[in-house]
Length: 233
Image (cartoon, rainbow, N blue to C red):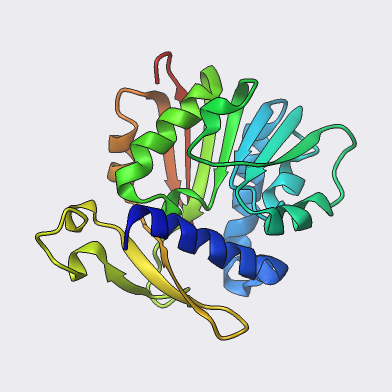
């Protein structure tokens, strides 16, 4: 699977899942974690001019909209943005944009905070440095970055179906170490998507030299990463 087809497959999957994407937040066993995650994210975004990457249906946009000073929420898919734009938001605070998470440096302004919810796990490992470089170029030096995603819990969620090394172990992609899930939508269609589960050490390693004040917290079902950008990061 080429890098381009990985992103195309992901975009297609979320476009088709948009009408019922937020069911994932209704799982009873995750409610305690979600309450804690919401509190931490809202506190980190309070008073900030936030760039939200891969905002999806606007679930987290709505949650932080009262606390943040302003939000520019970006997603690749117009299908999910249509749902996001329909949510009640404080007037004049939120702008939704169709855009590319790998071209954030093209945005016409800089921000003092970034929110990256449930996107990190979908970034192929070979493109993580590229994504972070573009993200940091869209932020002011010293801006806070808040990233959170799923933790791997055996028996919860969709099981991993393969990893890059399951193909030819001598191929250039085998070294990337991406893992994948086969997800089935309500219409029965099956979609293979990248879904990586980084460890705390991996999160810290990728930020070496480009971030300060790094904090990582693992809940049961989610992890939360906060850090500040450095000049030149």
